[in-house]
Length: 416
Ligand code: HGY
Ligand code: MN
Ligand code: MN
Image: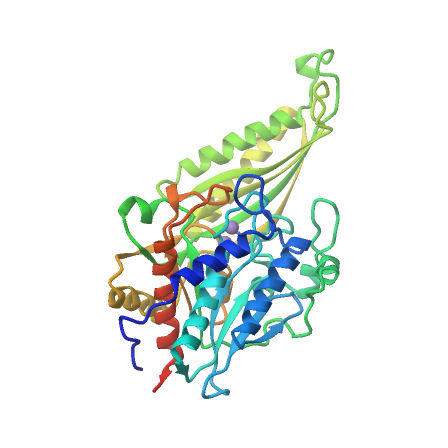
């Protein structure tokens, strides 16, 4: 296959303008975004993306999970398409680039191909996966998980948010439930451009992360039940304090993760306290443990130690507990040929690069189950993400999109 010439580059001004335009939809309160999945803001972002895709001559398909597939025809319509993409949904206090860079970087590849009049043998499809974040409806990567056959469609439709709203109903409400069966599409390959969401690339002054692996994740939702009672008049030995239980489990998760350094991580980001009154001992707490590791054995060991520790803590405090696994995927090894296409592109374009393991979860982790897949990462300022202050440079965005451009075009095969 003819490799694209090293001068083949995307239009970085247009990419940056599109990122800033999309960022106006579902603004946060501190310069980032709150465009959570299946909200009206998500619907608005989808409509803008669809408008841009139609202007670029792409044909839009939507599946029964609301995932959007914008197709650029190839010279051989029977050839398996090369897919690119990521997600437009954000955290409640999210940044402007997490996910969005991959979707709009994919659109920029198509826009650049159109500008240059380049035709490829294989079609190219730009994808917006529904509910990557999993913050409103757990688990994360929900639509790509259904696409890869991990989750059943009806199970996904029944996922509920904190207000009891059903995923399936919200998808209909915003008007983005498509007809296409989920997972029917076959791919030649899938490439996902994403910000690193960690500090390695920036600290080492490197432009491109060649993602060889993705770490595994477990989300354990824990419910502790003690007894509400007066914070003033209940003697300490008679308390059944679910709040204290949550505090001790929080410490336990940290200690267990610290036992498996340098790679393992663990924290509790979601916490609910009931009745959450200043002078009532917490009768109930509900929280989600998030533990991750690049090694399956470590992930399983942390899971086991945490379950054992919760039992010991609850025994000592005379409180009950329930543990529900609400998210899980094992560590991922990406496709060698796709990884090589990314690395070769970075070398050809003269960008500094290094192999890296994806710390966060991504739709690519599930797509990798059904198609040859790899990822491209660009640095982010202070490695910060899932924070409204998330920032990248225009140069980093352009470098990532250039590498995506080359990896995709080479895989889709330029037709002279
Ligand atoms: O949780 C994750 O790693 C991803 O941001 N959804
Ligand atoms: Mn993301
Ligand atoms: Mn995210």
